[in-house]
Length: 347
View 1 (spheres, rainbow, N blue to C red):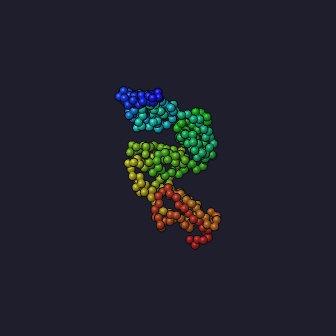
View 2: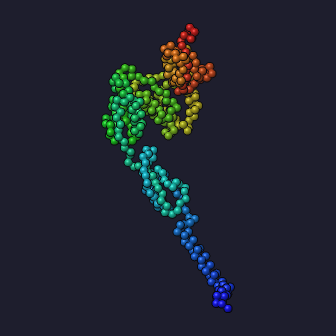
View 3: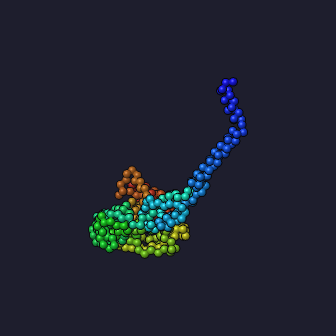
């Protein structure tokens, strides 16, 4: 018999032998045990199935947040800071990952804090600007208007001097963002009285801006519900709900507030600010403006038919119409259509 055939028979006999099967089983068992041990070791290394819930750190001081994360086997990293006057300096403003996210041990939590040092900006030059321009410039630079002081000067509502802490502040001087800048303005050297704006129903910031743009100052403030976050004007002194009031430029207006979340302003405003819709038909544009101004209403769209000159125009239609809408809220506008005065019958 050839040697190759004998060798093949020997291999086949070995494969069929008990010894071979025993070796195969031992090898398979060894491989399975090694795989199981490797997977367990990998689970232990990666902490498989064990996570940590990221806590809410917003509002905590930096040291408090770092200590809390350390106790939870997490790491802290301050990666940014922001300026925010509405939050406590040095506190945590935002975090990444967000609260509630499941992370592994030793995960780094990136924190953004509220800057401790105030944001500083260069004082703009407001001199010779109009009051309206100066207010816009202050807002653009993150500053606020302080007290308006009027002095005799032919340049009405022109900024003559800018002041901070009762002293003149030069353009380019670094100041803390958000501070109030007082303005010295000209009174026009003639009629120095201005109309008091209607503040009822306005939020505090809106009321202050409206007073400043009207050449008036904020006087005493009274929060009747001890709430300041959602305060709206409930009453003002002098009151203007009965008739127009005029004050000297730079005078103060006292404001009383109620909380928007406690007090029913919708019903109150309807009762307080509703007036009869004025009938403007037959009135000249000048008369229309005066009537609406005195009623705390405004002129909406004006249409002059056939290009009638303003001096020869009279109102023949309005929207809303007093017959269709007998009442209107102060602060709203009325659209007017005009025709030539000759088109109206003799009065």
